[in-house]
Amino acid sequence: TSAAVGGVYETPVGGETTWRSSWTSLDQTPPSPCTVSAVSQARSADFPVTVLASDNESTVIKYDLQVRIDEGEWQAASSSLLNSTLPPGIIYHSQQTGRLEFRCRAYDQGSNTTDWESAPLTTVTVDAAWPTSSVFTGDLLVQGSTLDLTLNGSDLGSGLDSISLYARPVGGEWTFEGSGLPGDTIHFSGLPGYFYEFRSQATDNFGHTQPWQSFAHDTAGLYANTIRLLRI
Picture 1 (cartoon, rainbow, N blue to C red):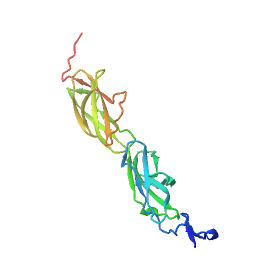
Picture 2: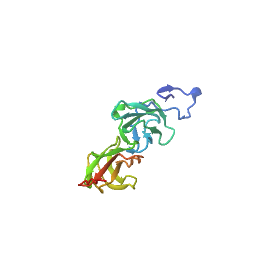
Picture 3: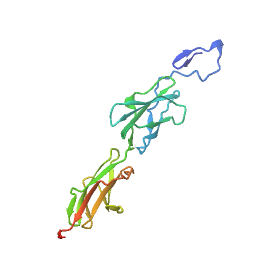
């Protein structure tokens, strides 16, 4: 009696007829399409990625995992990932913020595999960068008790959720004055005769909040409608 091992037929030595698990039938069927599991959004640059496929004829022994960033070229994320843990996977370290796509393919004991084109894609949005923002007054001196402030900001990952505006008299305490999005205008009311400092803090759609900066983004002074000159 002959048996096939990895697609090559062998004959038991010495007439042995006891069945061995290494005597497998000829396997020409590839494993099932490989699926990648990962979070849809990653706040950190490091996140787990797992792969999984099945094979009805023999056993899946390893996987190849690929990744591409912002629809660029496919690159190897891991080659010959062994099926030694359940589920097999890696901790992927992203080099940049953006939209990542993963795909995988499995190999069985007969070296069968599927083509890359049939592999389903799994998308992960990586947002590991802080949002940025600033505020602009437009004029150093403003007549009256109000002035308009323009918000600016950006985020490379999930996009901006809001920009908060804070103001204080020079040397005073910061107070919240309102929030908006890039291009929005916030009307600020103060007291003539004082200089005010302004700064902003942005929050993105993933929950990152811009760290406080040690300096004001802009400064403006308010003066009365009528200036009286006193002769000394």
